[in-house]
Image: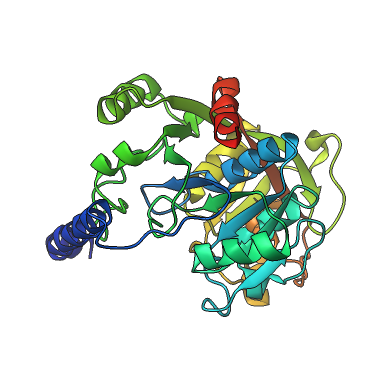
Length: 344
């Protein structure tokens, strides 16, 4: 099948690349309209599909803005939610309003992590959602989640994430993971390299990236563990108290990065199970995971925070724990200043 795809998919990638270039050109020439909100808009996006560590960066940006005393709102499409054509207020900034089916897993995760810090609104029409939030939530600044290709809404700062474990995406969709040609990085005001702790080729990647973006700032970042918590329960203290070896599963865009992260934290993985990104779990999936864990002698099961928002209604006969992470950015003071400059 892989050999067949190597012949079948490249022509479609060429067509996709052409369509993308035509769309970008239409925006450059003002043939397609761009909406402007009466508020600062900061976009956080990527140039490839799959997990690049974008969601932790969105959360980081929201916290920076909140520290500046701003009323923050995240505008997101709400991927794989139940009614994608309806607006859903996931959080008003103070309380969670929507369930995971209505919001989507990433939107609900952001809302939970940002209670008291930022509101979260799902709408495929981000400008419409922004105007609503200005009028109803008194939002002062917006973080546009997954916004690099959402050119319908003007932004004041364009931040792009690139996963250091797969920076170039292996070509254009559908044969690769690139959403647009790498030249599109020229629209970025800065680039954040993520998961730099997982590659031995960081210097070469940084040099190649700098050739593409020129003088545009490139920040390096890594994912760090903030703790483990029992699914639906308390945080473990210390983390080392978890029974080993462990079984691990996830439904994220870059599952190997999750498994590698656990290994670096000292976990012996008896089972690794990757589900499709944004997978909707059933009890049968949980039961099979438990059976695999027991069969391999694992005393615990680990998963991601993104997966955990969809697992609260299921029964685990083996203890299940959630890995909590955050992004740590080198020279973050410079990036914070770039954000402050937009607020001023």
